[in-house]
Length: 198
Image 1 (cartoon, rainbow, N blue to C red):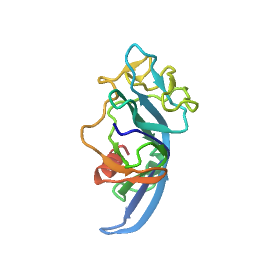
Image 2: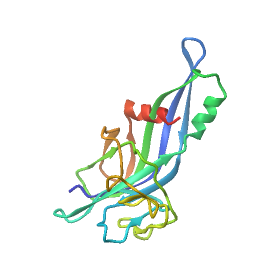
Image 3: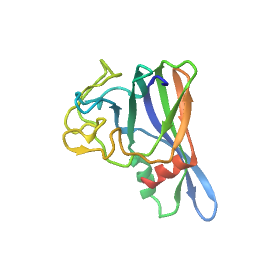
Image 4: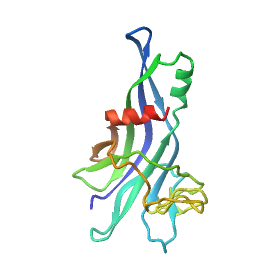
């Protein structure tokens, strides 16, 4: 039982290299922002499915008692069009992604010893919907059609094959969050995953 963490101000920092000949002679840094966010709230199938598509932050971790913790998982989809637009201006092979770093700001957390926040690649398309749980972000608000929930990637449309979402088995990145402040997630796998979506 590790407690919950509220995160916002999500952005992806990309470092690009421009190759003219055999050597990279120009380096450019760009920032991309989410096009979609949500939180998956663990509930039973008999309970109201909740979501937070239009909320200002995402939640991750656990809530409830130590003997019966309820999981929270944040979802983020980034808009990588700024990178694509740069690539389109040059011949194939000129622009390459050197590094991708994920930055998030922790608003709150209830574990003074620190909480390991893990990032995984998601395997299935999911929705944001029109639900906004800003008044109760820890437990969500009743999901609207098309929003991601614990059991459905798009509420009233598509189920997850596994409750809680379908994600890669390999850990993409991990950072220990101790309290309010900015935190960074970076691995070569994160860079590779970002490059694969271009």
